[in-house]
Length: 518
Image (cartoon, rainbow, N blue to C red):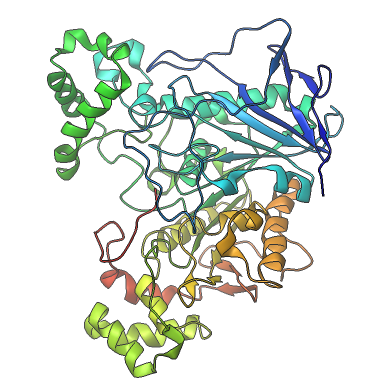
C-alpha cells in the first residue's frame, strides 16, 4: 500500500533559533534529516551555528565523523548497516515526530550511537531509524552524530590553554546537541523538560559520562544504558597524553612547538600516525585517547569516583544481553546433543570449573541449552550490576536493571549478542530479519519498546504486558528478563558469575570462527 508523502515549499517547515528548516512527512510522521546543531574548529569546543535567512532543507542525513579504520561489511544478517559520507564537520542530528505543535510536549528520546567513542554514527545501523519508535510510542526521537576518536578525544591540554578540553571535544558536541534540543525541540512537538538519553555499547558509555558532566545538567532528565558498562575499556585509566602526542608529532616530523599544525593536517595523516604509535603505548597501559578525559568538564566515571549530586537524581535503566560477544556461528544442532556431549564441550573450555558452572547455569536458565555457557557474557553483565547497586545506594531516583535473553532463529538457536536488543527497543524488528519469529518477536518488541517509551514518559518502565518491574535496592539487583517469558528475578545469577568470571574468556582475544562486528 502506498504511503502518503508530503514535502512542499511550505510544509513541513519549522523555525529553529538559527533559521527555518524543511523536512518531509510520511503517513503522519514528520521527519527531518541532517539538521546542523553546532560548528567547531578541530580540537576546539563547539559553537552555535550561524543564523541563516530563508529555509534550509533537512532532507538528507548529515556527514558522519571520520573513523580510524575502514569499515568492513560483515555480519550484516545480524546487524545490517548503512554507510555514509564522512567529514569532521559532522555535528548533525535527525528528528522524527508525530506533531509539530509547540504545545504537544511529547517525551523526547535522544539516541547516542555505539562504536565506543571511536566509530559509528547516528544511522550506522538500520535499527537506529526513529520512525517506528516515534509512531509506536508517540514520542519525539532524535539521533545525532558527533566527533569521534582523535578528533573528539585527544587530550592536547599539556600543549596549551587553547586545547584545555580537546580530550572531551566529542562529548562537548553531545552537550551542544542537548542544548540545541532544549532550545528548539518544542517546535518539533517535544517537551524540553522531559528528555531521555539512551544509547548502546559506546552510546551507553556516553550516557553515563554525560551524567558526570555538569554542563549537561538539566539538559536531560532520564538515562538508559544498554550494554554500556564494562571494565578496562572505553574510559582512560591513564591521563598523561604526552607520550602519545609526542610520538604522533615525531611520526609526522613535527616538534611540540609545532603542535598547531595538527589542526590543519589531513585527518588521514593524523590517523596513520596515531595507529603507528598507539599500540605500544596501549600495551604498556598508557593514555591512547579515544575516550573522555577526566577534568573539570567531565568528572570521571561514577563507579570509580562516585555519582555527582545531579547524577543521583537521574532515573536510570542499565542492562545487557546474555551473550554480548557471542558473534560466532554457534554450536550446530545443539538441541540434538546429549547432556554428556554438551558437558564435554564445557569441560574443554572451562576445565574443572565446568561441572559447577553447568549446575549454576541450569539453575539460572533452566530453559536454555548448556552450550550457551560457551558464549555467556563476561564483558558487561557483572559491571552493569555493580553500576546498578552503586546507583541504588542513592534514593533520589530509581535504577532499573534488565537482561535480554531471547534466542534468535539462526544456527540452530543463537543467544542474544551485542546489539541484538536494539531492534526490539526501537520497534524495528521489521528491519532486521534475524529477529523475527511469528507470534513471538512482535509481542516481545511491543513489550520492550513500551518499557522504553513509558520510562521516557513517566520515569517508570512498566506496561500492562510486563510483570511489575521493581527498581534495584542496595544489595538487591532486580532484573527484568526480556524473553519469550518476561519475568523479574532478584540477584539470580550472582553465584553463577562468581564462579564464571575467574574463567571467563577474554571477549577481545581472537577466536576460531568468530566474526567481530564493529
